[in-house]
Amino acid sequence: MIKGQCLCGAVQYQYHGKIENSILCYCTDCQQAQGSIAGWNSAVDQTQFELTSGREQLKEYFHTPNKARVFCQNCASPLYSYRTDLPDIIRLRLGSVTEGDIPAPKEEFFLEHKPNFIELR
Image (cartoon, rainbow, N blue to C red; front, side):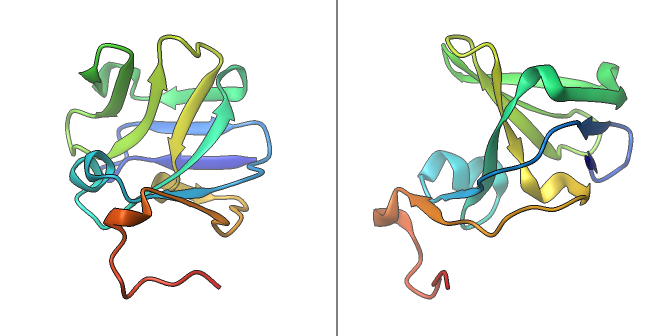
């Protein structure tokens, strides 16, 4: 099982599945949304994702008409995103995971925005 939370701990979740794959996305949207060099995400089955506390603290931001980024409105931690045209999938922000196994990223996207000092093994 995977457990995670936002920075302030108001929003907590469990994922009752196994994370099979993780990716690094270097697109400028992910860089700005994460405040970092990349977004570290995994597509997971929405039906196995459970918010255990803090649902009322969640805020959604639709950057595009189809994609919502979901974060804690108290501490602004990004937690996941979803697309309205893919209702069974969420993209979990892996930096919010506090317990459980996460595989090392094997895929990278938008390499044209990748800093040249980053190398995956």
